[in-house]
Image (cartoon, rainbow, N blue to C red; front, side, top):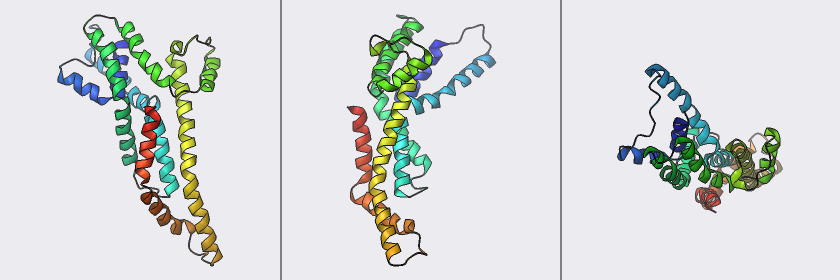
Amino acid sequence: MKRVLFAIFVLSLSPGVARAATATQTPILPAFPRDLGTPMQIVILMTLLTLLPAIVMSITPFLRISIVLHFLRQALGTQTAPSNQVLLALSLFLTTVLTAPLATQIYKEAWEPMERGEITAPQAWDTGTKPLKVYLGRFVREKDVRLFLDITHSPAPRTPADLELTVLAPAYILSEMRTGFQIGAVLFLPFLLVDIVVASVTLSIGMVQLPPVMVSAPFKILLFVLVDGWNLTIGSLMKGFAT
């Protein structure tokens, strides 16, 4: 079972690893015990695959990117442009770019030795989660870690590498949500200023029948295009994970 969980975890970090393994005819999903029937194997596999979206959305940069892009669309006042599908696809592709080196490292250091029989599945799990812990530890806040240590009644670790994923993963989610909301608030400020100026002008000249939002929307979009907002936003997000 741990072999299957580890396979799903590696696949969730980067689809490119799956394609590389397929090209080399390396089996991604390990064989189930022979005493399990085919229907039961399918049920177990489908159940475990339901964890894949949760892993992608929670313990990868997808979480922060999707939150920031949502706030950006709200700040622009374009409720359906870009659509949810476009924003999610962009978040997924950016996440793939950011996590590809990590997934490749885990695949080479843990999965390949396990397939060759050099290490066992528990050893592969321990080896594979070490780079993940280092990656998550770069963005997690000490306050959030302390919160989940108190909730789980776990002793304080001597080093960050001793943290369990049951503590580190939810702490990372809280930290990323906080960071995403902070970036979203900063994105809102210039567009909020445009809304305030437009509302003041329209009210001062007596245009009470025309909603200020309709007047300010073109100005906000024009401002965003003139400053090359997409390049600045995406570039800042990617550099935030690269440091």
